Image (cartoon, rainbow, N blue to C red; front, side, top):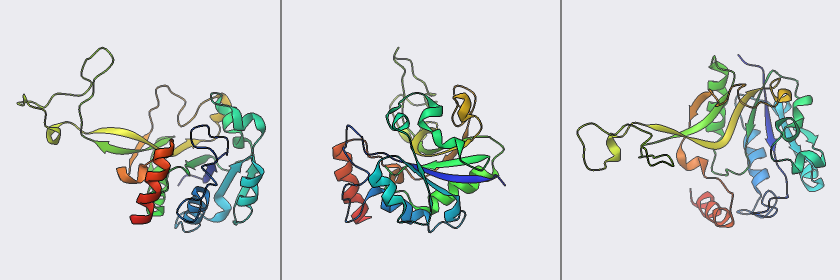
Length: 222
């Protein structure tokens, strides 16, 4: 079994949805939703959870929960490219592996998170990415089809298209030691991770204002 820590990384300086981590969301906040879920995990303990933030309001929020709080530097909060800076918490994570869970996916269930951790633990690969299944047609920028056209069909029918896997952008597994070398998930490009499936609806991601409002409605109704 892999020796795993769980990381939640958040910041308040989102330009597209300002302060989305601490904005009121269905009577709570996105970070409260995720931290509360993780405390119900059947596979990790609070001692394995690291809340990695830099804004003082988020630091204070982290101390409301029985988890580890790592204070990120100003450089980490503003970096967009350099992996060792973005994920500077790698210096203090005591385990060989880490699972990072995004707080931007409020529909994500704890059962799905636990499933991801279990399957990553059982995998012989060094990294993992959450994905959902898709049956659709895809072309590249030159107009060439990327997936195989269903044999015997001239009309488009997605029921018979080969399944493809779309990154869900809410859970990642990685070896910790490769982060200092500038790698994440795997040390090969493109990534060759374990693809761990999840329900597409749970991957609903908040990047824009309309998604924040839509996710709030879905969260309250589902």
